[in-house]
Image (cartoon, rainbow, N blue to C red; front, side, top):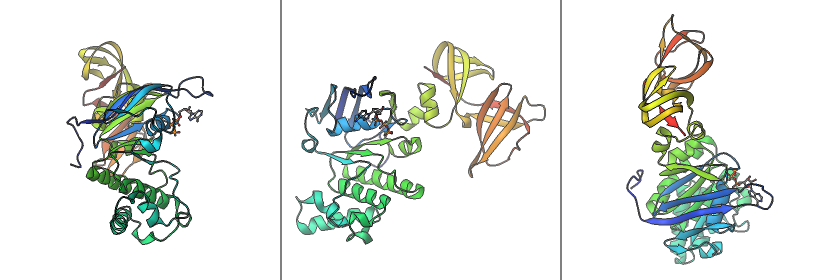
Length: 345
Ligand code: ATP
Protein backbone atom coordinates (compact mmCIF):
# COMPACT_ATOMS: atom_id res chain seq x y z
CA UNK A 1 0.00 0.00 0.00
CA UNK A 2 2.98 2.35 0.40
CA UNK A 3 4.28 1.75 -3.12
CA UNK A 4 3.81 3.98 -6.11
CA UNK A 5 0.42 3.68 -7.71
CA UNK A 6 0.21 2.66 -11.28
CA UNK A 7 -3.42 1.61 -11.38
CA UNK A 8 -6.00 4.40 -11.61
CA UNK A 9 -7.91 5.00 -8.39
CA UNK A 10 -11.28 6.65 -7.91
CA UNK A 11 -11.08 10.38 -8.63
CA UNK A 12 -11.13 12.49 -5.48
CA UNK A 13 -10.36 15.96 -6.79
CA UNK A 14 -10.96 17.35 -10.21
CA UNK A 15 -9.44 20.69 -11.23
CA UNK A 16 -10.65 22.09 -14.56
CA UNK A 17 -9.15 24.99 -16.48
CA UNK A 18 -8.32 27.12 -13.45
CA UNK A 19 -7.26 30.65 -14.26
CA UNK A 20 -6.09 33.52 -12.05
CA UNK A 21 -4.81 36.92 -13.03
CA UNK A 22 -3.87 39.34 -10.27
CA UNK A 23 -4.77 42.97 -10.89
CA UNK A 24 -1.08 43.91 -10.59
CA UNK A 25 0.10 41.34 -13.15
CA UNK A 26 -0.02 41.73 -16.91
CA UNK A 27 -0.07 37.95 -17.49
CA UNK A 28 -2.12 35.30 -15.71
CA UNK A 29 -0.40 33.75 -12.65
CA UNK A 30 -2.30 30.52 -13.41
CA UNK A 31 -3.60 29.65 -16.87
CA UNK A 32 -5.86 26.70 -17.79
CA UNK A 33 -4.58 24.38 -15.09
CA UNK A 34 -6.39 21.04 -15.15
CA UNK A 35 -5.68 17.72 -13.45
CA UNK A 36 -7.38 14.91 -11.56
CA UNK A 37 -6.21 13.48 -8.27
CA UNK A 38 -7.10 9.93 -7.21
CA UNK A 39 -8.16 8.96 -3.68
CA UNK A 40 -5.04 8.58 -1.54
CA UNK A 41 -2.79 9.83 -4.31
CA UNK A 42 0.14 12.17 -3.69
CA UNK A 43 0.76 14.77 -6.40
CA UNK A 44 3.63 17.24 -6.43
CA UNK A 45 3.23 20.63 -8.11
CA UNK A 46 6.80 21.29 -9.19
CA UNK A 47 8.27 24.35 -10.84
CA UNK A 48 10.54 27.35 -10.41
CA UNK A 49 9.72 30.31 -8.20
CA UNK A 50 6.76 32.34 -9.48
CA UNK A 51 5.33 29.67 -11.82
CA UNK A 52 1.94 29.64 -10.07
CA UNK A 53 2.18 26.64 -7.71
CA UNK A 54 1.07 28.42 -4.55
CA UNK A 55 -1.70 30.29 -6.34
CA UNK A 56 -3.05 26.97 -7.69
CA UNK A 57 -2.94 25.46 -4.21
CA UNK A 58 -4.63 28.49 -2.65
CA UNK A 59 -7.47 28.28 -5.18
CA UNK A 60 -7.98 24.59 -4.34
CA UNK A 61 -7.99 25.46 -0.63
CA UNK A 62 -10.46 28.30 -1.08
CA UNK A 63 -8.09 31.14 -0.12
CA UNK A 64 -8.03 32.68 -3.58
CA UNK A 65 -11.07 32.92 -5.86
CA UNK A 66 -10.31 31.72 -9.42
CA UNK A 67 -11.26 33.98 -12.37
CA UNK A 68 -12.32 30.92 -14.35
CA UNK A 69 -12.49 27.18 -13.89
CA UNK A 70 -14.05 24.61 -11.64
CA UNK A 71 -12.92 22.56 -8.64
CA UNK A 72 -14.81 19.42 -7.60
CA UNK A 73 -14.14 17.25 -4.55
CA UNK A 74 -15.82 13.83 -4.56
CA UNK A 75 -17.97 15.04 -7.45
CA UNK A 76 -19.25 18.08 -5.52
CA UNK A 77 -18.55 21.55 -6.92
CA UNK A 78 -16.54 23.41 -4.25
CA UNK A 79 -15.27 26.25 -6.46
CA UNK A 80 -17.03 28.94 -4.45
CA UNK A 81 -17.09 27.40 -0.97
CA UNK A 82 -15.11 29.05 1.87
CA UNK A 83 -12.03 27.09 3.07
CA UNK A 84 -13.69 25.77 6.24
CA UNK A 85 -16.57 24.24 4.27
CA UNK A 86 -14.29 22.20 1.99
CA UNK A 87 -13.06 19.55 4.43
CA UNK A 88 -9.48 19.92 3.23
CA UNK A 89 -6.39 19.97 5.49
CA UNK A 90 -3.58 22.50 4.97
CA UNK A 91 0.02 22.92 5.96
CA UNK A 92 1.22 26.25 4.64
CA UNK A 93 4.65 27.86 4.73
CA UNK A 94 3.79 30.05 7.72
CA UNK A 95 2.08 27.12 9.52
CA UNK A 96 0.11 29.43 11.89
CA UNK A 97 0.12 27.52 15.18
CA UNK A 98 -2.00 28.82 18.06
CA UNK A 99 0.58 30.78 20.08
CA UNK A 100 -1.18 30.45 23.46
CA UNK A 101 -1.67 26.66 23.20
CA UNK A 102 0.92 24.03 24.06
CA UNK A 103 2.30 21.78 21.34
CA UNK A 104 0.02 18.96 22.51
CA UNK A 105 -3.08 21.18 22.56
CA UNK A 106 -2.26 22.50 19.10
CA UNK A 107 -2.30 18.95 17.77
CA UNK A 108 -5.45 18.05 19.78
CA UNK A 109 -7.25 21.08 18.37
CA UNK A 110 -8.81 19.31 15.38
CA UNK A 111 -9.69 16.21 17.40
CA UNK A 112 -12.61 17.60 19.38
CA UNK A 113 -14.93 14.91 18.01
CA UNK A 114 -12.94 12.26 19.90
CA UNK A 115 -13.17 11.68 23.65
CA UNK A 116 -10.53 13.55 25.68
CA UNK A 117 -8.52 10.40 26.27
CA UNK A 118 -8.68 9.36 22.62
CA UNK A 119 -7.70 12.83 21.42
CA UNK A 120 -4.77 12.91 23.83
CA UNK A 121 -3.56 9.47 22.71
CA UNK A 122 -3.91 10.31 19.00
CA UNK A 123 -2.11 13.66 19.42
CA UNK A 124 0.75 11.99 21.31
CA UNK A 125 1.04 9.32 18.61
CA UNK A 126 1.26 11.99 15.92
CA UNK A 127 3.87 13.96 17.86
CA UNK A 128 5.91 10.78 18.34
CA UNK A 129 5.79 10.17 14.59
CA UNK A 130 7.30 13.58 13.90
CA UNK A 131 9.82 13.10 16.72
CA UNK A 132 8.46 15.75 19.10
CA UNK A 133 6.88 13.75 21.95
CA UNK A 134 9.34 15.24 24.43
CA UNK A 135 8.22 18.81 23.63
CA UNK A 136 4.47 18.35 24.29
CA UNK A 137 4.22 21.06 26.92
CA UNK A 138 6.17 23.77 25.09
CA UNK A 139 4.52 26.78 23.48
CA UNK A 140 5.17 27.45 19.75
CA UNK A 141 7.51 30.40 20.48
CA UNK A 142 9.74 27.99 22.43
CA UNK A 143 10.34 25.88 19.31
CA UNK A 144 12.67 26.20 16.32
CA UNK A 145 11.18 26.88 12.89
CA UNK A 146 11.66 23.26 11.87
CA UNK A 147 9.97 22.01 15.08
CA UNK A 148 7.02 24.34 14.50
CA UNK A 149 6.74 22.99 10.98
CA UNK A 150 6.56 19.43 12.32
CA UNK A 151 3.88 20.40 14.85
CA UNK A 152 1.83 21.89 12.00
CA UNK A 153 2.22 18.66 10.03
CA UNK A 154 1.16 16.58 13.05
CA UNK A 155 -1.86 18.82 13.67
CA UNK A 156 -3.12 18.53 10.10
CA UNK A 157 -2.39 14.83 9.63
CA UNK A 158 -3.98 13.89 13.00
CA UNK A 159 -7.41 14.58 11.54
CA UNK A 160 -6.72 12.38 8.46
CA UNK A 161 -8.66 14.59 6.00
CA UNK A 162 -9.35 13.05 2.55
CA UNK A 163 -7.12 15.73 0.99
CA UNK A 164 -4.16 17.60 2.46
CA UNK A 165 -2.53 20.62 0.80
CA UNK A 166 1.14 21.04 1.64
CA UNK A 167 2.98 24.22 0.61
CA UNK A 168 6.75 23.72 0.98
CA UNK A 169 6.12 21.92 4.29
CA UNK A 170 9.75 20.85 4.74
CA UNK A 171 11.39 24.17 3.88
CA UNK A 172 12.54 24.90 7.44
CA UNK A 173 14.07 21.50 8.10
CA UNK A 174 17.74 20.70 7.69
CA UNK A 175 18.75 18.31 4.89
CA UNK A 176 18.78 15.11 6.98
CA UNK A 177 15.53 15.95 8.79
CA UNK A 178 13.87 16.83 5.49
CA UNK A 179 14.63 13.44 3.95
CA UNK A 180 13.36 11.62 7.04
CA UNK A 181 10.27 13.77 7.57
CA UNK A 182 9.09 13.60 3.98
CA UNK A 183 9.12 9.79 4.06
CA UNK A 184 7.28 9.81 7.41
CA UNK A 185 4.68 12.17 5.97
CA UNK A 186 4.25 9.98 2.92
CA UNK A 187 3.74 6.93 5.16
CA UNK A 188 1.26 8.81 7.36
CA UNK A 189 -0.76 9.97 4.36
CA UNK A 190 -0.77 6.50 2.83
CA UNK A 191 -1.78 4.77 6.05
CA UNK A 192 -4.59 7.30 6.62
CA UNK A 193 -5.67 7.00 2.97
CA UNK A 194 -5.36 10.79 2.58
CA UNK A 195 -4.56 12.29 -0.81
CA UNK A 196 -2.13 15.21 -0.91
CA UNK A 197 -0.91 17.99 -3.15
CA UNK A 198 2.63 19.06 -2.33
CA UNK A 199 4.01 22.35 -3.63
CA UNK A 200 7.77 22.27 -4.06
CA UNK A 201 10.53 23.70 -6.22
CA UNK A 202 12.81 20.81 -5.24
CA UNK A 203 12.84 18.15 -7.96
CA UNK A 204 14.50 15.59 -5.71
CA UNK A 205 11.78 16.01 -3.09
CA UNK A 206 9.04 15.70 -5.73
CA UNK A 207 10.56 12.54 -7.18
CA UNK A 208 11.18 11.06 -3.73
CA UNK A 209 7.64 11.29 -2.38
CA UNK A 210 5.05 11.94 -5.09
CA UNK A 211 3.07 9.30 -6.98
CA UNK A 212 2.76 11.80 -9.83
CA UNK A 213 4.36 15.13 -10.59
CA UNK A 214 2.77 18.08 -12.41
CA UNK A 215 5.54 20.29 -13.78
CA UNK A 216 4.51 23.95 -14.01
CA UNK A 217 6.08 26.71 -16.08
CA UNK A 218 4.71 30.26 -16.40
CA UNK A 219 1.31 29.45 -14.91
CA UNK A 220 0.68 26.28 -16.91
CA UNK A 221 1.03 22.57 -16.25
CA UNK A 222 3.31 21.45 -19.06
CA UNK A 223 3.70 17.79 -18.12
CA UNK A 224 2.08 15.44 -15.65
CA UNK A 225 3.08 11.86 -14.94
CA UNK A 226 4.87 9.50 -12.57
CA UNK A 227 8.40 10.58 -11.57
CA UNK A 228 9.77 7.79 -13.75
CA UNK A 229 7.74 8.82 -16.82
CA UNK A 230 8.74 12.46 -16.51
CA UNK A 231 12.40 11.70 -15.83
CA UNK A 232 12.62 9.28 -18.76
CA UNK A 233 10.42 11.14 -21.20
CA UNK A 234 10.50 14.89 -20.55
CA UNK A 235 8.45 16.81 -23.14
CA UNK A 236 10.71 19.86 -23.32
CA UNK A 237 14.22 21.09 -22.58
CA UNK A 238 12.78 22.96 -19.59
CA UNK A 239 11.35 19.77 -18.04
CA UNK A 240 14.49 17.77 -18.90
CA UNK A 241 16.77 20.22 -17.11
CA UNK A 242 14.39 20.94 -14.25
CA UNK A 243 14.11 17.24 -13.33
CA UNK A 244 17.74 16.33 -13.00
CA UNK A 245 20.54 17.25 -15.33
CA UNK A 246 20.41 16.89 -19.06
CA UNK A 247 22.48 17.46 -22.20
CA UNK A 248 20.51 19.02 -25.04
CA UNK A 249 21.62 18.00 -28.57
CA UNK A 250 20.30 18.69 -32.04
CA UNK A 251 19.57 16.02 -34.61
CA UNK A 252 17.55 14.96 -37.62
CA UNK A 253 14.96 12.34 -36.75
CA UNK A 254 13.39 9.75 -38.96
CA UNK A 255 10.91 7.47 -37.16
CA UNK A 256 12.61 5.74 -34.24
CA UNK A 257 16.14 6.93 -35.16
CA UNK A 258 17.98 10.22 -35.11
CA UNK A 259 21.22 11.36 -36.77
CA UNK A 260 23.45 13.35 -34.40
CA UNK A 261 27.08 14.37 -34.11
CA UNK A 262 27.47 11.22 -31.96
CA UNK A 263 26.23 8.99 -34.79
CA UNK A 264 22.77 7.51 -35.41
CA UNK A 265 20.97 6.85 -32.14
CA UNK A 266 17.70 5.15 -31.19
CA UNK A 267 14.85 7.43 -30.07
CA UNK A 268 12.57 6.81 -27.07
CA UNK A 269 9.58 7.74 -29.23
CA UNK A 270 9.07 8.39 -32.94
CA UNK A 271 9.85 11.83 -34.40
CA UNK A 272 10.63 13.34 -37.79
CA UNK A 273 12.74 16.23 -39.03
CA UNK A 274 14.92 18.61 -37.02
CA UNK A 275 14.63 17.89 -33.28
CA UNK A 276 16.18 18.85 -29.97
CA UNK A 277 17.18 15.85 -27.89
CA UNK A 278 17.71 15.20 -24.21
CA UNK A 279 20.51 12.90 -23.11
CA UNK A 280 20.93 12.24 -19.40
CA UNK A 281 24.51 12.32 -18.06
CA UNK A 282 24.20 8.70 -16.94
CA UNK A 283 23.34 7.62 -20.50
CA UNK A 284 26.83 8.50 -21.72
CA UNK A 285 29.85 6.25 -21.38
CA UNK A 286 33.26 7.73 -20.88
CA UNK A 287 36.31 5.82 -22.16
CA UNK A 288 39.88 6.91 -21.54
CA UNK A 289 41.55 7.09 -24.96
CA UNK A 290 44.78 9.01 -25.63
CA UNK A 291 43.55 9.62 -29.20
CA UNK A 292 39.98 10.47 -28.14
CA UNK A 293 38.32 13.56 -29.65
CA UNK A 294 37.17 14.90 -26.24
CA UNK A 295 38.85 16.18 -23.11
CA UNK A 296 37.80 16.08 -19.43
CA UNK A 297 37.62 19.69 -18.27
CA UNK A 298 36.02 19.27 -14.85
CA UNK A 299 35.14 16.64 -12.28
CA UNK A 300 33.02 16.47 -9.16
CA UNK A 301 33.32 13.57 -6.74
CA UNK A 302 29.86 12.58 -5.45
CA UNK A 303 30.62 9.47 -3.39
CA UNK A 304 28.67 6.83 -5.30
CA UNK A 305 29.64 8.27 -8.69
CA UNK A 306 31.53 11.04 -10.47
CA UNK A 307 30.24 13.93 -12.49
CA UNK A 308 32.45 14.93 -15.43
CA UNK A 309 32.40 17.94 -17.73
CA UNK A 310 33.75 16.83 -21.08
CA UNK A 311 34.60 19.20 -23.92
CA UNK A 312 34.27 17.91 -27.46
CA UNK A 313 34.78 20.64 -30.05
CA UNK A 314 32.46 23.51 -29.20
CA UNK A 315 30.27 21.42 -26.95
CA UNK A 316 30.57 20.66 -23.23
CA UNK A 317 28.80 17.46 -22.15
CA UNK A 318 27.88 16.40 -18.63
CA UNK A 319 28.62 12.72 -17.91
CA UNK A 320 27.97 10.63 -14.80
CA UNK A 321 30.16 7.61 -14.39
CA UNK A 322 30.53 4.98 -11.63
CA UNK A 323 33.08 5.71 -8.90
CA UNK A 324 35.31 2.85 -10.17
CA UNK A 325 38.10 4.11 -12.42
CA UNK A 326 38.55 7.85 -12.04
CA UNK A 327 39.61 9.82 -15.07
CA UNK A 328 41.72 12.89 -14.42
CA UNK A 329 40.98 16.39 -15.55
CA UNK A 330 42.96 17.00 -18.73
CA UNK A 331 42.71 13.37 -19.94
CA UNK A 332 41.65 12.63 -23.55
CA UNK A 333 38.46 10.56 -23.75
CA UNK A 334 35.84 9.19 -26.09
CA UNK A 335 32.09 9.62 -25.43
CA UNK A 336 29.54 6.98 -26.34
CA UNK A 337 25.81 7.44 -25.94
CA UNK A 338 24.53 4.07 -24.81
CA UNK A 339 20.74 4.47 -24.56
CA UNK A 340 17.68 5.87 -26.33
CA UNK A 341 17.63 9.65 -26.54
CA UNK A 342 14.48 11.68 -25.97
CA UNK A 343 13.05 13.99 -28.66
CA UNK A 344 11.81 17.28 -27.15
CA UNK A 345 8.95 19.51 -28.21
P1 ATP B 1 7.24 30.34 -5.10
O1 ATP B 1 7.87 28.99 -5.31
O2 ATP B 1 8.23 31.45 -5.19
O3 ATP B 1 6.34 30.40 -3.92
P2 ATP B 1 4.97 29.94 -6.89
O4 ATP B 1 5.23 29.03 -8.05
O5 ATP B 1 4.25 29.37 -5.75
O6 ATP B 1 6.32 30.60 -6.43
P3 ATP B 1 2.91 31.95 -6.97
O7 ATP B 1 3.13 32.37 -5.56
O8 ATP B 1 1.72 31.15 -7.27
O9 ATP B 1 4.20 31.19 -7.52
O10 ATP B 1 2.93 33.26 -7.88
C1 ATP B 1 2.64 33.23 -9.26
C2 ATP B 1 2.70 34.66 -9.81
O11 ATP B 1 1.62 35.43 -9.27
C3 ATP B 1 3.96 35.41 -9.45
O12 ATP B 1 4.34 36.17 -10.57
C4 ATP B 1 3.56 36.28 -8.29
O13 ATP B 1 4.33 37.45 -8.26
C5 ATP B 1 2.10 36.57 -8.57
N1 ATP B 1 1.30 36.74 -7.33
C6 ATP B 1 1.12 35.81 -6.37
N2 ATP B 1 0.30 36.26 -5.39
C7 ATP B 1 -0.04 37.52 -5.74
C8 ATP B 1 -0.88 38.54 -5.17
N3 ATP B 1 -1.53 38.34 -4.02
N4 ATP B 1 -0.97 39.71 -5.82
C9 ATP B 1 -0.34 39.93 -6.99
N5 ATP B 1 0.44 39.01 -7.59
C10 ATP B 1 0.61 37.83 -6.99
